[in-house]
Length: 297
Image 1 (tube, one colour):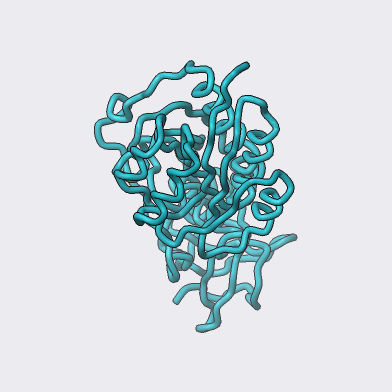
Image 2 (tube, rainbow, N blue to C red):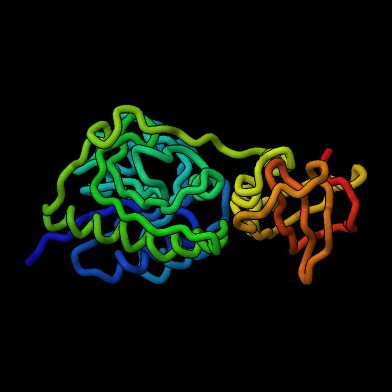
């Protein structure tokens, strides 16, 4: 009889739901408990715990002595983090035989940190990565177990990358767990890929304001990067805030005469707006605009 890999599951959101269903229905794995985020109400995870008779509890501080003792009682082989929002410290990292693994929607050692899909679009990347790695005392710096990349086209936006992530993160995590269960994996030191990598900072209120003095490509990327279900790009027309959820990048558009932020003409679905180097088409607009208006603060 094959010994099952005993798993403690720290999770939140759709990616964790899809991953859970893959793991719980495989005979190689035994999920001993589920710990959700303390600041959200994930009813799906709670219902899973009832359906499969798995212990479910919240931990205000995963690194406290009380939490460490509680987790120890389950004698897990590995702890799994999927969209969990607490930082694991040394004692809990070393608590189990294998350690803690995390699924990160970023191409490590690049795109560590927060709001990765938004930043990948803003930076005009042609692909993004999903990485399963060991957790160490740094942030997203542990050895890589498995990494896959996915193409980004001009038709993509934040919502489409989220959909890819919701489907693919569970698959990559599951495959990594299979490798661990079958003792068929190698630890890849991130410094062998790049000695430094880089971090992405968390986006905050105010970061959604469009800078019309930027070039067309950057503005196009910015708008699609924070489109629904993100905060949506914003600008002002006569001091009244409007939102712009979509735009089109016009390749080889000429440097149209006008001032940046000026609405140049109407199109079938939106408007052309002057940028630093040319113009873009904006549409899916919430707010009143007309030709000749000057957008911006």
